Length: 321
Image 1 (cartoon, one colour):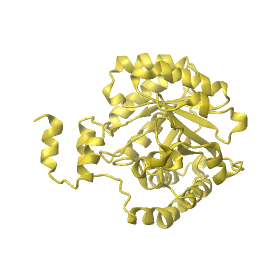
Image 2 (cartoon, one colour; image 1 turned 90 degrees about the vertical axis):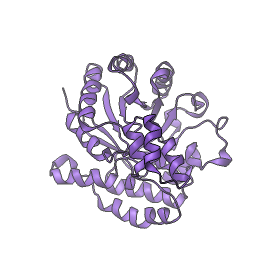
Image 3 (cartoon, rainbow, N blue to C red; image 1 turned 180 degrees about the vertical axis):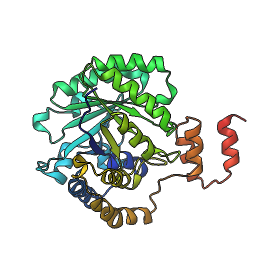
């Protein structure tokens, strides 16, 4: 199988925005944009293309909606080589209204997030965005709850779609490296004839987001999602600084473009103040337990927000004991 050139996608604003309802200052966003360019990041995701009919703009920051003018206020015409992306959730976006022709947009890629039971609509969204001129990916969420047979059927459908990439998404942080290895092989095999890339989006419930990301990379997965300081809903994601440090350690010529130092500077200058302001994410026992039980992290988030610490009670609750 031909190895695709590896690319790194920063989704700090999109997954991190789930922590603070997308209330990032323009200074933070502009600094992150400039930092990613200096660090050699290949794609930067600005947030969601969410429906303003379904979500009240007064209750979220602007990166929940990623209006064209808002992105341009940060990047101008994006003179850099780094590409820009947004995510559109099936059933939560007015994509025919809000996703304009690529020639009129600074956005390069639209990532379509779907569950297994809405693949048909995901394909229709992919076709629409592809016809508009965008790169597209389909990110299948919560696959820890799907059987192999279900996944193979879905991957067959997607291999016949215009999607440039299909993402292996560990939504609940449930997978171990040996499972990621097997699933990565499954995804890669399903897409090889169509030349479809495979991406990885890992969650850190069991402190395996980094390990699972590099495990998938070793199998040939070539779109790697990261967030600065691991910022993301609940336990967070594979951290940019970990992945860039690892790539440097390989000594590989094609990884010399990446530079960890700008990311470390950004953490010091922007992430530490954000944490001091009360924004919280990262590994904790409740997230570990929901990950082990393949449960949505909302239960753990509510547990932590209520400042509860009776972990054994949560364990019994999740286990049905």
